Structure formats: C-alpha cells, structure tokens
Image 1 (cartoon, rainbow, N blue to C red):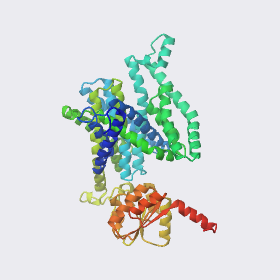
Image 2: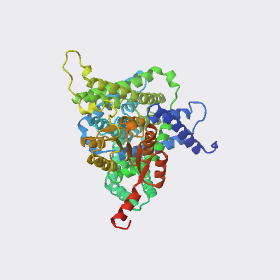
Image 3: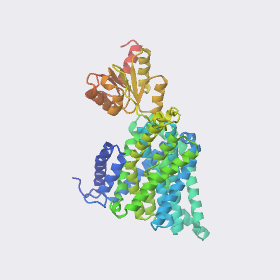
Image 4: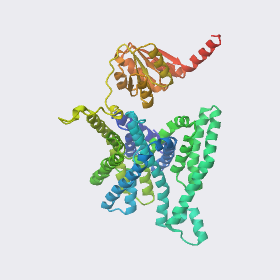
Length: 573
C-alpha cells in the first residue's frame, strides 16, 4: 500500500489505476473511455466515501493536462482544412455558440443566477468535445468525408473562440471586480496616469499583451522552434527529440503566462500551432502522445473530483434542462444552420449529432468561472453532470442518426404511389452496413499503405482474388478506385475480419506497421481460421517474436530484408 506521507504518488497511482479500470469498462460498453476517467475522479473525490486523492495536487497535475491537451489541439490545427469549409464552419459555429450561450443564460436566469454566471454557463455548454467527436468520426470512417471536415472545422472554430474567451474572461472579471491592480502592467499604467483605467483600458492592455505574445511567436518562435526541433532530430536521439517537444510545449506555455500574462492554454496552443507547420509535426505528435494521454487522463480525473453526485438527487430538473440544451438545443440549432446553407440532410444530421455533447473546454471554462467567482459551484456541477450524461448518450445519438439516414436512403421508405427515390449519394452509401464478402479461398490484405499497396499491385497483376481492410478513408478510396474490394474498419477487431471472409480465406497479409494492432489482428484471425497462412511485418526481433507467438507463420523484418537486398545487389550475399 502506498504510504500516506507521499500524497503525489497516492494521487497519481489512485487516479491512473482507477481510471484504467473504469475506462476499460466504458470501452467495453462502447462508450468513450473518458466517461470512465470522469467517474474515476468522482470515486477518488471528496464527495464519495473511501480513498480521497489530494485535490490540490490533482489540480496542479490537471494544469499540465490542460497544457498538453491544448498543445495537441494546436498540433492538429490545420488552417487548410478550416479554409476548405470556412463558408459554413466559421459563421455556423459562431451563430451556434451565440444561440447556445443564450439558451444557457436563459436557464441560469430561471435558476436565479446573475448575468455573468449565466453567460459563463451558456458559453461552457456551447462548445463540444474534440476528443469525443474525433473518436466518433474515426469509428465511422468519416474524418476525411465532407461532413467530417465540416464537423471538425466547426469544432476548430469553437476551440479558437474558447481560446479567445480564456484570454478575455479573466481580464473582464478583474476589471469589473476592481481587482485589476494586481496585474503589474495595469498597476504601473494606473500609477503613471494616477487614475483607474477602467474596463476598456484593462481589455486594451490584455489585447496588447496577447498581440505581443502572438507577434513574438510568429516572428521569433516560428524560426527558433522548428530550428531547435530539427537540430534535435539530427542528433539521432529519440529520447532527446521527445524531451525537446515536451520542453517546447511546457516552456512556451509557462513563458506566455509569466512574461506576457497570457493563459497557459493559449501559450500551449500557439506552441503546437507553430510546430504543426514543421515537417516533423507528425513525429512530434507521435512521440508525445503517451505522455499527453496520461496527463489528459489526470485532467479528466481531476475534473471528476470536483463533481458532487448528490446533485443528481437534489437538482434533477436543472440537470434535465442542462442535458436537453446540450443534446436537443445545440443539435436543433446546428441542423437548422447547416440546412440554411443548403447542405444535404445527411450532412446536417451528422453535424447536429456531433455537437450533442460537451467536454474539455467546458471543464476548463467551468473551473475558470468558479475560480474567478463568476460561476456558482452549482453551475460547475450542472456542467459536469451534463457532460457525463451527454458523452454517454452521444454514441446512441450517432446510432439513431445512422438508422435514420439508412432508412431515408432506402427506396422502401418512399410513400406508396411516389416515384422511387434516387440512389443515395456517396456520402450516404457509406452509412449502409458493409455486407460480408462472397469471396472464398482468397487473400486478405490488412492496410493499404506503402507495403499494402505493393502487395495489392502484385495480386492485381496475377489476377488473384483478394480484399483489403483499411480504416483510413482516403486510402480506402484509393483502393476502391483501383477496383479493389475494401472493408472499412480496424482489423484488430473481429468484425472487419469477419466481413472480409477470414473464415474461408487462404492467406492473410498484415501490412500495418503498428505491432500491437497487428498482433490483435493475427490473434483474431488465427482463432477464426486455424488453417489460414499469415504473414506480417515487424521492426525488431522482439516484435517479430511477439507476432509469431500470436500465430503468424512468417514475419518479415524490414531492416533485415533491406540489408539482404543491398548485399544481393552488390553480389556479396
């Protein structure tokens, strides 16, 4: 048992262990794991019996989680993707934020709160969770589709609006409460002018400080950050590269806060955005992903610790109203806005259900509002309750949307006497469940990347029957353009393999580079068809041994084959 005189260790161990257990249960129930993380926080929080984690330490750890979450948002911020859907995503998101904030304000007024608390409450309800949305779109292979890009672009605009809110809200709160003199810059200006510069002055100083920070990042950071990263990459040390990325994320965030008075979140976002322009951005994202995930878990656990579950019994009607605003109010608003832009119904439906939840920024705003004395504690509890319930219900909303669109696309749904409906557009066809292949004694290729493409070209030239399993929509579409049958999905699960006909397949080529997912695919395939011949790829002797233990007949290690090929070309093999 962890000694009680080590609260940091107790907090981290208790939070991560319980988050893993409950996250795994949530995943098993087809829910986002972060539902489990939030519930883990409730269990280790002060409002439930048993072990209570150190709340102050959890809050500090969650600050690192916020920094790394915002750094990740910046790393994946794509101005190109946003501009491709700017005509609908920018005005749509801004109108939806305004209207949803108004709904939240209306509920707050009914509950007797002041206008400031109501605006903060509504703003927290207006923004959806990027984590939940991306997971839902990935599961449905919609990320690269038009409706997927609109939904993601919409959330990018929401995220940018919330980043701006995180900068302006503290300044507004300080100015209106008379506490602005605690800011040394403001205090110096007021001392020089021998007068109170007021709300407008406070906002002007804040905007100037943010502008200075942005200018330094664009002029200096844009050159120094990629330069430092490239120098580290050229050392060949993976450890140093990973450390450099983390130092940039945390260092820029801290520098933004200490030198410019800008929020840690904004500093981290800009660090990620600057880094996203480098060709090393993908590697930076991959190298820091485990640590970002770990601290993100601690962030969600810390948020859960703040939630008092007794509010479910004390305030059932306000919670119901909050959930209805999130799930119905925001969805109806989004659906109407998208339809007003004359977009197809299927696009409006997907965008509507994508926004029917709240997450990371809502928690950050709720915590900020309570900390500044703007939002009452009851408001944070309502936001947390609404977030947990909406995240749990969001997969059901997507399921209902899928059923509605498939039914709408079906000719059988046409009223009697009506002409047969035209064939559904490509975007709607993707929603129809994939039928199992009719192939037998065939080959299955998992992954249509560089290796999978070479395999497919060879099988096409030999006129051999085969099918591809691919979860990236752009690569799946590339295979379809070549006339190759494709099962969209992840071969690590049994469904995609079953649809590809693994039970009657002759051979399986696992061409994906991720050894963990490859191992899961091999294990599932071996259980379904003990006699299938399986070949896989690996990057090390350990990976090769791991894949063989799970059932691979042949494992090809890239480095070894390259070396043998070089020797063969030089005639020294």
